[in-house]
Image (tube, rainbow, N blue to C red):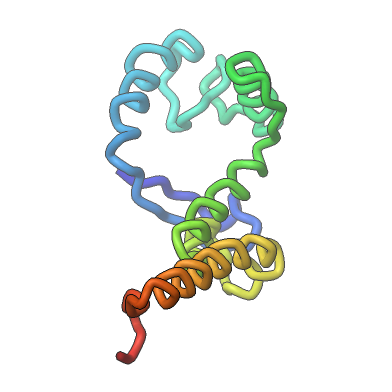
Length: 150
């Protein structure tokens, strides 16, 4: 399964397509077969239709997601938070994660991602530096990183 957005649906005007992780298949299947028909009894090509089968307005969906998260967790988050979270997760995985974050967000340039999320790059870089120093103090060689020429 993939998610596909037409260029007119994205900020950059570029089409966006990405595979959905398989762990999302069961909840997506439950939504489509069990819950969506209760929201919209009409056939619809939209994942989150309104009661008439048209695309649910994004502000309406955002309000509902925000209310649900607040109810379940006590946290107040907006929809843009999930973009920040995605980039944080991949940048925390390693200093090279900014490229992956750029692709996740559909940015046409990593410079766009770097400008918006530059503060996220420092933590994994310092963590890698600290791990390297710890290994050197212990008399061990630093681990070879992908792409290094050793």
